[in-house]
Image (cartoon, rainbow, N blue to C red; front, side, top):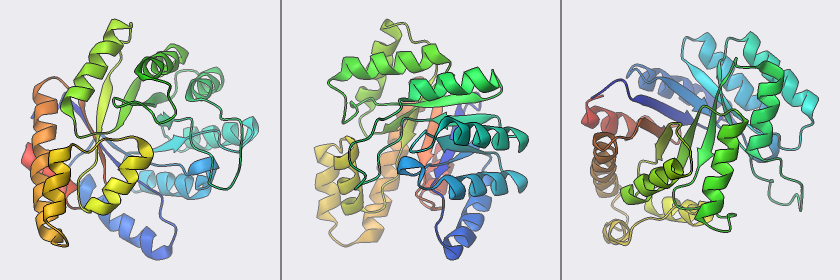
Length: 276
Protein backbone atom coordinates (compact mmCIF):
# COMPACT_ATOMS: atom_id res chain seq x y z
CA UNK A 1 0.00 0.00 0.00
CA UNK A 2 1.20 3.51 -0.83
CA UNK A 3 2.26 5.20 2.41
CA UNK A 4 2.11 8.57 0.69
CA UNK A 5 -1.55 8.12 1.60
CA UNK A 6 -2.58 9.20 5.12
CA UNK A 7 -4.19 6.90 7.67
CA UNK A 8 -5.70 7.90 11.01
CA UNK A 9 -7.92 6.54 13.78
CA UNK A 10 -10.61 8.34 15.80
CA UNK A 11 -11.51 7.82 19.47
CA UNK A 12 -14.10 9.33 21.77
CA UNK A 13 -12.94 10.49 25.22
CA UNK A 14 -13.76 7.90 27.93
CA UNK A 15 -15.96 8.94 30.84
CA UNK A 16 -14.96 6.32 33.40
CA UNK A 17 -11.72 5.03 34.89
CA UNK A 18 -12.39 1.65 33.27
CA UNK A 19 -12.88 3.37 29.92
CA UNK A 20 -9.61 5.25 30.34
CA UNK A 21 -7.71 2.06 31.10
CA UNK A 22 -9.28 0.33 28.10
CA UNK A 23 -8.35 3.21 25.81
CA UNK A 24 -4.71 3.00 26.94
CA UNK A 25 -4.62 -0.61 25.77
CA UNK A 26 -6.55 0.06 22.56
CA UNK A 27 -4.43 3.07 21.60
CA UNK A 28 -1.20 1.17 22.23
CA UNK A 29 -2.31 -1.75 20.04
CA UNK A 30 -3.53 0.45 17.19
CA UNK A 31 -0.50 2.73 17.45
CA UNK A 32 1.69 -0.33 16.83
CA UNK A 33 0.22 -0.40 13.31
CA UNK A 34 1.84 2.94 12.53
CA UNK A 35 -1.03 5.38 11.76
CA UNK A 36 -0.22 9.01 11.03
CA UNK A 37 -2.27 10.21 13.99
CA UNK A 38 -5.24 9.62 16.28
CA UNK A 39 -8.03 12.13 16.85
CA UNK A 40 -10.28 12.54 19.90
CA UNK A 41 -13.85 13.81 19.57
CA UNK A 42 -15.41 16.81 21.32
CA UNK A 43 -18.88 16.41 22.84
CA UNK A 44 -21.88 18.52 21.89
CA UNK A 45 -21.66 22.00 23.38
CA UNK A 46 -18.12 21.30 24.58
CA UNK A 47 -19.45 18.75 27.06
CA UNK A 48 -16.28 16.64 26.91
CA UNK A 49 -13.82 19.56 26.83
CA UNK A 50 -11.81 18.43 29.87
CA UNK A 51 -11.89 14.73 28.94
CA UNK A 52 -10.90 15.47 25.36
CA UNK A 53 -7.99 17.66 26.45
CA UNK A 54 -6.78 15.18 29.08
CA UNK A 55 -7.00 12.27 26.63
CA UNK A 56 -5.13 14.12 23.87
CA UNK A 57 -2.37 15.43 26.12
CA UNK A 58 -1.84 12.12 27.95
CA UNK A 59 -1.69 10.14 24.69
CA UNK A 60 0.80 12.62 23.24
CA UNK A 61 2.89 12.40 26.40
CA UNK A 62 2.94 8.62 25.88
CA UNK A 63 4.45 9.12 22.43
CA UNK A 64 1.21 8.60 20.48
CA UNK A 65 0.50 11.35 17.94
CA UNK A 66 -2.96 12.58 18.93
CA UNK A 67 -5.04 15.61 17.92
CA UNK A 68 -8.19 17.16 19.40
CA UNK A 69 -11.53 17.87 17.82
CA UNK A 70 -12.73 21.35 18.75
CA UNK A 71 -15.82 23.53 18.45
CA UNK A 72 -16.91 26.72 20.18
CA UNK A 73 -19.86 24.96 21.79
CA UNK A 74 -21.14 27.03 24.71
CA UNK A 75 -17.72 28.55 25.43
CA UNK A 76 -16.60 32.11 24.88
CA UNK A 77 -13.56 33.09 22.86
CA UNK A 78 -11.21 33.30 25.86
CA UNK A 79 -11.91 29.70 26.88
CA UNK A 80 -11.13 28.49 23.37
CA UNK A 81 -8.04 30.71 23.16
CA UNK A 82 -6.74 29.29 26.46
CA UNK A 83 -7.35 25.78 25.16
CA UNK A 84 -5.46 26.52 21.94
CA UNK A 85 -2.52 27.81 23.98
CA UNK A 86 -2.51 24.65 26.10
CA UNK A 87 -2.51 22.48 23.00
CA UNK A 88 0.28 24.52 21.42
CA UNK A 89 2.36 24.30 24.61
CA UNK A 90 1.84 20.53 24.65
CA UNK A 91 3.36 20.25 21.18
CA UNK A 92 0.11 19.57 19.35
CA UNK A 93 0.13 20.84 15.79
CA UNK A 94 -3.17 19.63 14.31
CA UNK A 95 -6.83 20.30 15.19
CA UNK A 96 -10.11 18.99 13.79
CA UNK A 97 -12.24 22.17 13.70
CA UNK A 98 -16.00 21.62 13.72
CA UNK A 99 -19.26 23.49 14.10
CA UNK A 100 -20.35 21.03 16.75
CA UNK A 101 -23.88 20.23 17.90
CA UNK A 102 -26.18 21.69 20.51
CA UNK A 103 -26.65 19.25 23.42
CA UNK A 104 -30.12 17.75 23.63
CA UNK A 105 -32.42 19.73 25.88
CA UNK A 106 -30.48 22.98 25.49
CA UNK A 107 -33.05 24.58 23.18
CA UNK A 108 -32.29 27.02 20.38
CA UNK A 109 -28.75 28.43 20.44
CA UNK A 110 -26.59 30.25 17.94
CA UNK A 111 -24.27 27.76 16.28
CA UNK A 112 -20.81 29.11 15.54
CA UNK A 113 -19.86 27.62 12.20
CA UNK A 114 -16.61 25.81 11.52
CA UNK A 115 -15.41 28.50 9.11
CA UNK A 116 -15.58 31.00 12.00
CA UNK A 117 -13.58 28.67 14.25
CA UNK A 118 -11.00 28.12 11.50
CA UNK A 119 -10.65 31.88 11.04
CA UNK A 120 -10.38 32.38 14.83
CA UNK A 121 -7.60 29.80 15.08
CA UNK A 122 -5.73 31.35 12.16
CA UNK A 123 -6.10 34.87 13.59
CA UNK A 124 -4.67 33.84 16.97
CA UNK A 125 -2.15 31.10 16.14
CA UNK A 126 -1.18 31.75 12.53
CA UNK A 127 -0.09 28.63 10.69
CA UNK A 128 0.91 26.64 13.77
CA UNK A 129 -1.96 24.18 13.44
CA UNK A 130 -2.86 21.96 10.51
CA UNK A 131 -6.64 22.32 10.44
CA UNK A 132 -9.00 19.51 9.48
CA UNK A 133 -12.68 20.18 8.82
CA UNK A 134 -15.74 18.02 8.13
CA UNK A 135 -17.19 17.13 4.72
CA UNK A 136 -20.47 15.39 3.83
CA UNK A 137 -20.60 13.32 0.62
CA UNK A 138 -24.21 12.29 1.30
CA UNK A 139 -25.41 15.76 2.42
CA UNK A 140 -25.43 17.08 5.97
CA UNK A 141 -28.84 16.63 7.70
CA UNK A 142 -29.13 20.41 8.17
CA UNK A 143 -28.12 21.34 4.61
CA UNK A 144 -30.74 22.53 2.13
CA UNK A 145 -29.01 20.51 -0.59
CA UNK A 146 -25.67 19.20 -1.84
CA UNK A 147 -24.71 22.59 -3.25
CA UNK A 148 -24.85 24.03 0.28
CA UNK A 149 -22.46 21.36 1.55
CA UNK A 150 -19.92 22.23 -1.12
CA UNK A 151 -20.36 25.97 -0.52
CA UNK A 152 -19.81 25.60 3.24
CA UNK A 153 -16.78 23.35 2.70
CA UNK A 154 -15.25 25.92 0.35
CA UNK A 155 -15.76 28.63 2.96
CA UNK A 156 -13.89 26.52 5.50
CA UNK A 157 -10.98 26.09 3.12
CA UNK A 158 -11.02 29.78 2.22
CA UNK A 159 -10.81 30.58 5.95
CA UNK A 160 -7.62 28.53 6.23
CA UNK A 161 -8.43 24.83 6.60
CA UNK A 162 -5.83 22.42 5.18
CA UNK A 163 -7.91 19.31 4.53
CA UNK A 164 -11.24 17.64 5.27
CA UNK A 165 -12.44 14.35 6.73
CA UNK A 166 -15.82 13.04 5.60
CA UNK A 167 -18.74 11.66 7.50
CA UNK A 168 -18.63 7.88 7.15
CA UNK A 169 -20.31 6.30 4.14
CA UNK A 170 -20.64 2.95 2.37
CA UNK A 171 -21.25 4.29 -1.13
CA UNK A 172 -17.98 4.79 -3.02
CA UNK A 173 -19.73 6.60 -5.88
CA UNK A 174 -21.08 9.21 -3.47
CA UNK A 175 -17.57 10.03 -2.26
CA UNK A 176 -15.94 10.31 -5.68
CA UNK A 177 -18.84 12.29 -7.13
CA UNK A 178 -18.63 14.68 -4.16
CA UNK A 179 -14.88 15.13 -4.65
CA UNK A 180 -15.40 15.75 -8.36
CA UNK A 181 -18.03 18.42 -7.67
CA UNK A 182 -15.78 20.04 -5.09
CA UNK A 183 -12.98 20.25 -7.65
CA UNK A 184 -15.34 21.83 -10.17
CA UNK A 185 -16.09 24.47 -7.55
CA UNK A 186 -12.44 25.35 -7.02
CA UNK A 187 -11.65 23.10 -4.04
CA UNK A 188 -8.22 21.53 -4.46
CA UNK A 189 -7.45 20.42 -0.89
CA UNK A 190 -7.41 16.74 0.19
CA UNK A 191 -10.74 15.22 1.29
CA UNK A 192 -10.10 12.09 3.36
CA UNK A 193 -12.86 9.46 3.47
CA UNK A 194 -14.12 8.57 6.93
CA UNK A 195 -14.93 4.88 7.32
CA UNK A 196 -16.97 3.18 10.06
CA UNK A 197 -16.32 -0.56 10.53
CA UNK A 198 -19.49 -2.62 11.02
CA UNK A 199 -19.87 -4.44 14.35
CA UNK A 200 -23.51 -3.98 15.38
CA UNK A 201 -26.17 -3.47 12.72
CA UNK A 202 -28.91 -2.02 14.93
CA UNK A 203 -26.61 0.58 16.50
CA UNK A 204 -25.21 1.48 13.10
CA UNK A 205 -28.68 1.85 11.57
CA UNK A 206 -29.86 4.10 14.40
CA UNK A 207 -26.79 6.32 14.27
CA UNK A 208 -26.81 6.49 10.47
CA UNK A 209 -30.41 7.71 10.47
CA UNK A 210 -29.53 10.62 12.74
CA UNK A 211 -26.38 11.73 10.92
CA UNK A 212 -27.54 11.26 7.34
CA UNK A 213 -25.25 8.38 6.36
CA UNK A 214 -26.89 5.89 3.98
CA UNK A 215 -26.45 2.14 4.39
CA UNK A 216 -27.03 0.53 0.96
CA UNK A 217 -30.06 -1.76 0.87
CA UNK A 218 -28.03 -4.85 -0.02
CA UNK A 219 -25.84 -4.36 3.06
CA UNK A 220 -28.92 -3.92 5.26
CA UNK A 221 -30.48 -7.08 3.87
CA UNK A 222 -27.38 -9.15 4.52
CA UNK A 223 -26.90 -7.77 8.03
CA UNK A 224 -30.54 -8.34 8.92
CA UNK A 225 -30.30 -11.94 7.71
CA UNK A 226 -27.65 -12.67 10.37
CA UNK A 227 -30.05 -11.85 13.21
CA UNK A 228 -28.20 -12.07 16.53
CA UNK A 229 -25.21 -13.87 15.02
CA UNK A 230 -22.65 -11.20 15.94
CA UNK A 231 -19.72 -13.23 14.60
CA UNK A 232 -21.26 -13.37 11.13
CA UNK A 233 -22.09 -9.65 11.28
CA UNK A 234 -18.47 -8.83 12.08
CA UNK A 235 -17.04 -11.17 9.44
CA UNK A 236 -19.31 -9.69 6.78
CA UNK A 237 -18.56 -6.17 8.00
CA UNK A 238 -14.80 -6.73 7.74
CA UNK A 239 -15.18 -8.08 4.21
CA UNK A 240 -17.41 -5.23 3.01
CA UNK A 241 -15.39 -2.43 4.61
CA UNK A 242 -12.09 -3.91 3.41
CA UNK A 243 -13.41 -3.95 -0.17
CA UNK A 244 -14.72 -0.40 0.25
CA UNK A 245 -11.33 0.83 1.44
CA UNK A 246 -9.45 -1.07 -1.26
CA UNK A 247 -11.51 0.61 -3.95
CA UNK A 248 -11.17 4.04 -2.38
CA UNK A 249 -7.40 3.79 -2.21
CA UNK A 250 -7.03 2.22 -5.66
CA UNK A 251 -9.11 4.97 -7.27
CA UNK A 252 -7.25 7.87 -5.75
CA UNK A 253 -8.49 8.65 -2.23
CA UNK A 254 -5.68 10.39 -0.31
CA UNK A 255 -6.01 8.03 2.66
CA UNK A 256 -8.57 6.83 5.22
CA UNK A 257 -9.81 7.99 8.62
CA UNK A 258 -11.22 5.10 10.69
CA UNK A 259 -14.01 5.69 13.21
CA UNK A 260 -12.89 3.07 15.74
CA UNK A 261 -15.57 3.34 18.46
CA UNK A 262 -12.63 2.77 20.85
CA UNK A 263 -12.22 -0.83 19.67
CA UNK A 264 -9.12 -2.64 18.42
CA UNK A 265 -11.07 -5.03 16.22
CA UNK A 266 -12.23 -4.99 13.48
CA UNK A 267 -10.09 -1.89 12.76
CA UNK A 268 -6.84 -3.82 13.07
CA UNK A 269 -8.05 -6.64 10.82
CA UNK A 270 -9.19 -4.23 8.11
CA UNK A 271 -5.84 -2.43 8.34
CA UNK A 272 -3.98 -5.73 7.88
CA UNK A 273 -6.26 -6.75 5.00
CA UNK A 274 -5.31 -3.52 3.24
CA UNK A 275 -1.62 -4.28 3.61
CA UNK A 276 -0.86 -0.80 4.93
